[in-house]
Amino acid sequence: MSIISLSINNKAIGPIETSDDVMMIEFLHEHLNMTGTKFGCGVGVCHACTVIIDNQDGTSESVRTCINGVSRFNGKKIRTVEGHAKANEFGEIIKLSPVQETFIENFSFQCGWCTSGFVNETTVLVERLKLMPIRVSEIETVIEKALGDHVCRCTGYVKYYKAVKELILSTEGLTRP
Amino acid sequence: MKMNVNILKLSALCLALPLTANATQNDLVEQGKYLAKLGDCTACHTIDEGQANGGGLPFTTPFGIVYSTNISSNKEFGIGHYSLEDFTDAMRGGVAPKGNLYPAMPYTSYHLLTDQDIEALYRYFMSTKPVKQENRDNDLMFPTNIRMGLKAWNLVNHDSKVFEADADKSEKWNRGSYIVNGLGHCGECHTPRDAMFAMDQSRHFEGELIGGALASNITPKELNRQGWTKQDLDDVLRKGYSRKGTVFAGMYPVVFHSFSHLTNDDMSAVTSYLLDNDGEITAKSDTFNGHDKSDPGYDLYKGYCAGCHGIDGEGKPNVSPALIANATIDKAVPINTLSVMLNGVEEQRYSYTHGFYAMPSYRDTLSVKQLTELTNYIRKVWTKQPSDLTESQVQEWVDQIEDSIADAAH
Ligand code: FES
Ligand code: FES
Image 1: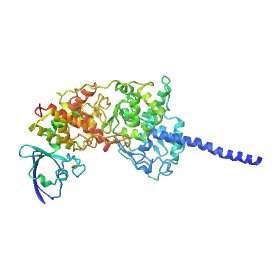
Image 2 (image 1 turned 45 degrees about the vertical axis):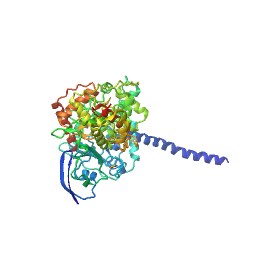
Image 3 (image 1 turned 90 degrees about the vertical axis):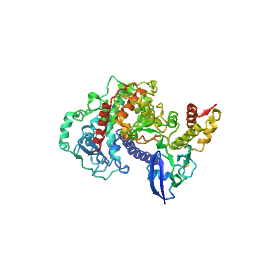
Image 4 (image 1 turned 135 degrees about the vertical axis):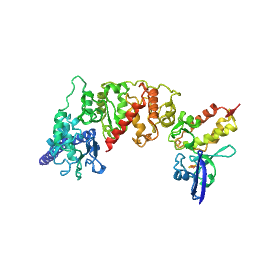
């Protein structure tokens, strides 16, 4: 048993007592009723269950929740897909994040099973490029490398990659000459 | 040798006689089976697939609950003891051997049937598997629980005359009218009711709110304005989905049990009648007026709808119908647009390879203000309808929808 406290989407959670063999995805679904993070393969292959950890040095990283126990997240600041859109005081969505917007505008996903993973991974990518812009010529390789592990069973890859490329090119400061 | 030939002849004759009689009998039963599908009889008279036609399905009327009856060939509980005459009286006049039927049984449409079709139906029902299932008592409030009242109702509201062809129209059109108004009993849902709850024939097919959704206006005028082609109607009635959108709510079982079984000729007659046009109709170009990102409805659309319906409303095969050309949103009164937003739509499966995802209900998510902005926005982008609905109008429609759901549930 461990006592867990963490911050999810800027909300303090815990302290909660959980068993050490509980995986983070289960903790999100069963203890917090946050079902936006999707469970796919359960063995770390499909990356559908990816969430974001915000490090103290201002960088962010993506982490799979199906193969990481909840204690790995103890004391961490994390973001899930539920945390991206802006909501008003009544909890109504008023604005999607630029990543969400670009996926919608490109009609990238179909069933949405892989979407939260793609949204989180792309968000991490964009944040990394903000700190370390890339050359336009590298753009495809960079996207491929960042998102290549994410499985979309509806085969939405082309539209996903197109959307991410569009976003990177249209956001100031992500590319350099 | 000679005798042998005679014996052969004789036996051939013996065989031939009953065979011919059986053949016509079988033909009638077959025809009746087809007609029973057209009339969708089994859908209302079955609660349990194994007990087809055993009755017991509850129907909620403004006066209480009426249960459908056993119409299998069982002699004790079903209609096995009916004579052809009894059956005809029930179909045309709503009068069964035990007394008057409630007009939940659409004899108010079925009276149009020809004698021959009634007989075919009769033969078919007499050939069905007898189901030993007792009828349930209705749960109606006074005074509608007194069947005698129905005699008076019929006197005022029911005219049991047989279909009369319109000499000015084609044979095809007339066949369509016979199907749609008779066994198809489309008017029972699509025609507004008057104060006596009879179909208001002066507003034939102009649409009526039932169980939280609008049985649409299906007059030729409206269907032609919305740009339906014969193929579109054929698709939607046979498959449940078409270029003009999908069916939902009470129309889904109608397609499933009834219209999907129509022969090509009958379907063509139906579409000719509905569009009041025997010829082909070329599709009009679809309305897409482009996005207005400054409209508050744009963000709502993007946040709640575009993920499935596409940013330009193009829809996605096997996921969601397109909003472009969608007849559900191209209506003067946006009740069905609001109805799907409030109630969502259940998943629809048409085959192993074709279907639509469920649409979530936004009843607890969207406020009336947001519903108004979103509905106006959708109308602005994909229809030529005015997009200046006010919150109080929308509130009123929402109330009507909720009332009609409550009515259907009590
Ligand atoms: S569910 Fe975690 S990687 Fe597949
Ligand atoms: S959209 Fe279905 S799995 Fe990617």
